[in-house]
Length: 209
Image: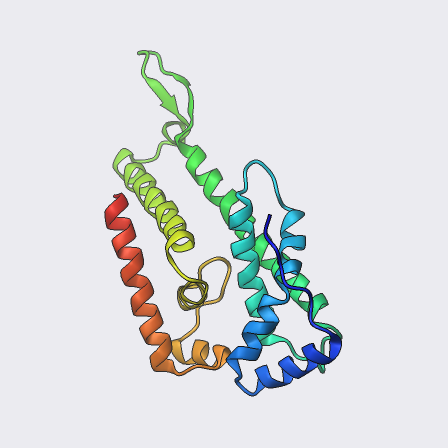
């Protein structure tokens, strides 16, 4: 069973938020670490045999990081309330993406046989061009592998940068400069993180292809 750190006191949280706004990464990390219990609490609502608990926690942490980075005390009363909403939004976007992929994959489902005894699939009934369909299925297979590789191979920081850089997991696509401003780091550092993450992902895909 995972042990999470206790939530910060209101005074400690206010201090860390102030330091975080000034670019203090240690304060930012402390806010994240002491709110992981909240991630587990929200993720528990979506646990099921179809969803790996570790996947839910990983996606929830992305929502928490987003909450800590964008929290505005003048507009939001409590970090925990705002963070819970961000975590839930991130999980819902991930689940919607998976459902969409599942529906696309079901195009390959066997639905019977034709008059000559050949298997019929849903895509055959829709009269798709066979070559195009095969290419589409291969692309979907590659996309699934890429998403799995992202979650299994990258660090939290790398996953966040890649997700926001290329509009994955429900994020809007951002420039390196926009990500740098959001995370409080230099654009060149974002570039290094992006290149390193893409190299890791490429090795993962080549190894498992």
